[in-house]
Image 1 (cartoon, rainbow, N blue to C red):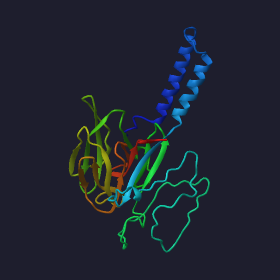
Image 2 (image 1 turned 135 degrees about the vertical axis):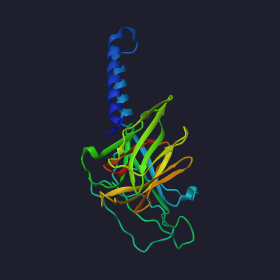
Image 3 (image 1 turned 180 degrees about the vertical axis):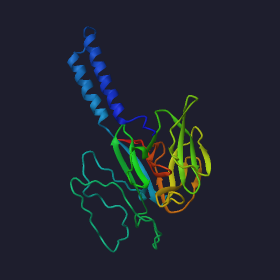
Image 4 (image 1 turned 120 degrees about the horizontal axis):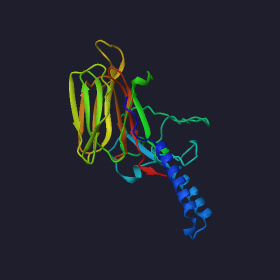
Length: 298
């Protein structure tokens, strides 16, 4: 199976190693320093953990209307560091509803997902209602957030897990998709300084009817995926799988690939935050999620 090529843990290890090397150098060269050694080491030891402890934020969404750009219609709520969700100022509600409900969370309770539906109002103006919603996801500043998965959530075994994560400064050049009535397999090709690297194949224990290659230009970024979740048919019938996929970029829409049938899903995210995909697979692509890197630092 394809393994993640980088992680926040590696960054932490490197920073710690650099600190040790710097302290060793200072001890060896103390006679050349005018500043007291203890003061320098203390400053470094305080500074490095401070940098490593900072939070990074990824933006996922919006779901709902994307048409209103008026600043007065924008709203945001972002938890401060070490704060728990309790109450916040009201957003929307220029027109009142019928029912007022209060959701109270326990001290050790975390939101891990949201479900909802989109509709059309009978009212006249934007701003009287919640027109759209997105999510802020926090990680430590150097780590990658996992969003999803869509499709099956059955864990399976280690052989069913797949992961593709962009290496630093690599560009996603191509996605190879084996598909037909559903998505059978995915492979990812990256490029840096003229050198290409292709991941292991995710899924594809059984082959499809068509192999398509989605090629991205050097300045093209994936900013969303659309797809459908269905049930497999044929020899291995009745398994929850990804039946179709569409990749939305800063330049165009690629797809759909597979067969658009079943329950739709849509996952948009902020430009420049895409870091890879992961999921579950066997004979087919059973589930897919997204790796996102922070675009906001706190």
